[in-house]
Image 1 (cartoon, rainbow, N blue to C red):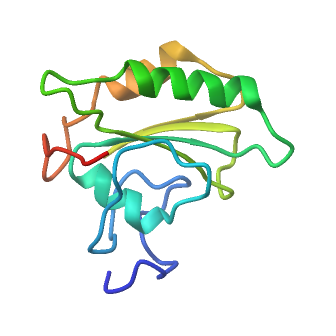
Image 2 (image 1 turned 90 degrees about the vertical axis):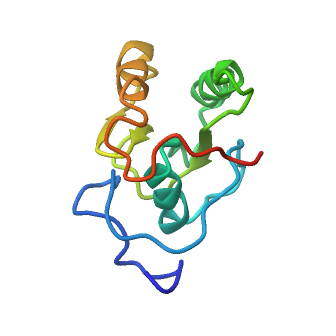
Length: 133
């Protein structure tokens, strides 16, 4: 997509697990403010993962679990290829996403999240790319 503000990015799923995206991607880190889907979709294309949350009233315990998972995920080259971000469009409180695979739920389900993360790089068109912090 020519613009990261284009609302047509992604596939037909909510949240998207692939599809059209903008030309820029995000550093792999934890964000306190919502990041544009068109940006993190580009990260998914590179084989990165996204953990998103939607808690308008706050859900500090759920977000703490995502932050702990982010902290624990390092590859052999010491890069975290994972983003944690709020996403107000999620149909549930939490989502785990990689290119082609996703899970959405209202409670922290480590088994489901790790299952999605086990598919990281599997279907990504530009897999195994590093990610700046």
